[in-house]
Length: 98
Length: 120
Length: 110
Image 1: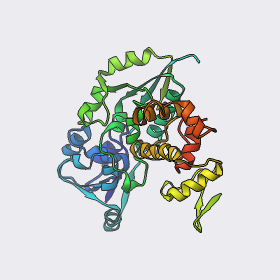
Image 2: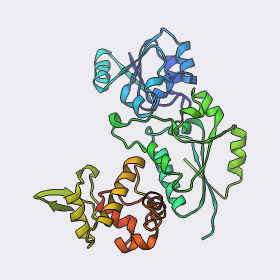
Image 3: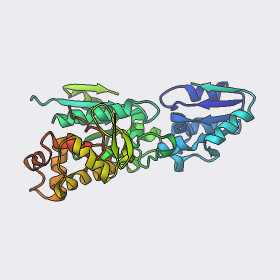
Image 4: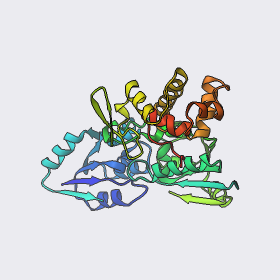
């Protein structure tokens, strides 16, 4: 399954819910969700504690807009909009943690 | 015109919602009317000042640049919560303009001293 | 609304401001000046170009008080005063010069 998170982890519980409930697969961070994977942040610690359970992606345009593309934690693959579409197509189902 | 102390309390990340941009617009209007304006940034609001925004990919205005004009508007009182920065792996050096960092409690006292508080 | 320049049409809003910032060139500026009944001189262009540079740097059209101060800093005190700017743009320097510069209406301009 592809999990999409679009909220900042320090503003909403979307990332927490996703990390706790989802049974592996991939997580794609978009919009304010990209803050979750910034180095040295609380979000990074949460994602690390679920290490290995998920493949991690972040939308490059959203990370660049927020000035954090060069601050992504290890193990995050930045994807463009085409990559976003590919991820959706590759996975049988998709859950948006709005 | 009576001059009042206006504080804008910014708690939202930029771009994901319109709060940050709307706040900045009202800040400029208040400053154009020569009010005593100060800005507080806490929680995800500190992300508004993270330097190096490049918004071409999301086709939105990079209003980060506009914070640089605040000085021309005589808006120089910018306060940032240091706890919020730390939780996000940021320091004052990561921000696009010079600010004064302080504890959450000190910021709360600052908000208490205002005539008008606008929340974004 | 729209204005016609060199056989090309450019979209403007209901107050006559250019809709697309990137549509602007000096000919478009000159045509916008006509709609404001402003005869452009070197002094006018200096202010218009200053505004375009300011917009590029800060992404806003400054309020008139800020414009006056910023022009004074860059072009000297004899130009950084409202009398000089109102002589060039009688219906409001920020408003008229911004329109001619192809910028949106200044923030804080009622």
